[in-house]
Length: 273
Length: 227
Image 1 (tube, each protein chain N blue to C red):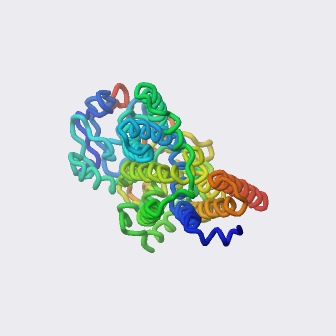
Image 2 (cartoon, helix red, strand yellow; image 1 turned 90 degrees about the vertical axis):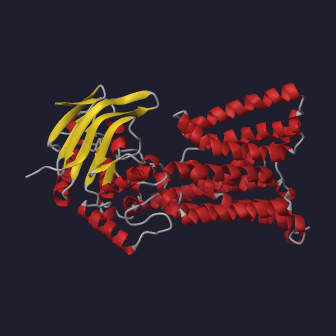
C-alpha cells in the first residue's frame, strides 16, 4: 500500500488530523515548560497519571479517565502548592512525582490491581484515536492558540520574569497557574497519542528546536507549531509508508528537527562572527 | 517650603507567615529625594520594597504611597502604577525577547493591558526612552545577548517608560564591573533630575549607594537606623 492509499482509510485520516492539531496547538506549551523551568512537572504529571489510573482501576473506572482526572487535579494544585510550601514550581513537582509514585505502588500492592494494566498507559497509539478524541485535541489546540493570542504580552512578561510581571501589576500567579493547567491537559491528551514515555517528542522537542533559532517569543511559538506539525504529521506519514511504530517515528522526526535547528543555529552564529 | 512625604511608613510589621522580617519600622521618604537603604542579606530590604509595591500586605502598621493608604488590594494595585521598579540584575533565561519588548513591558497597566494592545504612542515612548538611556542602537537585539551594564540600563528604561514619580532600585550597581557601575550611577543621577524622580535604592553594601543617595539608612534587626 502506498501512502496515498493509506490516506483514504478513516483510521489514518484521523491519525493525521490528530497529529496536525497536536503539533499546531499543543506544541506551544513546550515553550512554557522550557521557560518556566518546568521540566520536572511533566514527570510529575506522568506519575500522577499512573496514580490516577490505579485509583480508577480500584473504583472500576477506565484507567485513562483516572489518569486524565489525576493530571487535571494535579496541574491545578502544582502552582498553589509551590507557593504555599515556598518552593519553586519545578521543585514542588518532584514532591508530587515521588509522592504519587509511592502511593500508586501502595495501591497496586494493597488492592491487588494489575500494575501492568496501568503501565499500559505508558504506550499510546495515535492510530487508536476516536472521533471524539480528535474533537478534544482540536478544541484544546484552539483554546491554547486563543489564549496565547489574547494574552501574548502578559504571558511574555510571566515567562521573562514572574517577579517583575507581578510588580507591574500583571496577575502573574494566575497566568502561571492557567499555563500549568493547559500544560497538564496537553500532556494528558498526548498520553493517548504517543504514550507517556514519548510525550517529550510531542510537547518539548518542537519548542526546543524553535527556541534555538527564534528571535522573539512570537517567533518561538510560531516555529514551535510548525516544527510540531512537521514532526508529528511527518512521523505518522513515515510510519504509514514504512510500516514503523507511530510513536517512535514521531519521536525520531522531532529529534531530527532539534538536530537540524541546532546545526542551523550554529551555522548562522558562525556566519555572523 | 513644605516638604511632601511620598512614602510614609509607621510601625510596620511585615514578613512571611509567622516569620516577621520587618519590626516596628518607621520611614518617611520626601518628594525628590534619593534615599539609600543598606542592610545585610536577609535584613528585609526586598521585603520592604514588596510592601511599598503592594505585593505583600503589612501584618501591622500603616503604609501610604503618594498619600494613599495601602490598605486594600485595589489601592495596592493602583499604587503600583505610580512606581517604577528596577529589580536585582538577574540572568535572563533563554527566551528570545528584544530590548524594545522588555522596555515596553513597563507600559503595562499604564498604556496597554488586558485586551488592550500596545499603541503607537506606547512604542514611541519606548523609542524615546531608549534614546535617552543610550540604547537605541540595540533596540531590536535580544536582551540575553547584552552585557550586565546594558541589561541594567534596559531595566532602568523599563521603569522610566512607566512615567512613575517614584523609582525603586534593588542593588542598582552591585553586580557590575567598575566601568558599568560608573555609567549606571551617572544615568541614575541624570534621569532623577530630568524626570523629577524620588528614588529609593537598596544594597547590601552602603558604599554602592554613596554617590547616588542624599542620605543612607541602615536596616538592622527589622528596623531602620541612621547611618
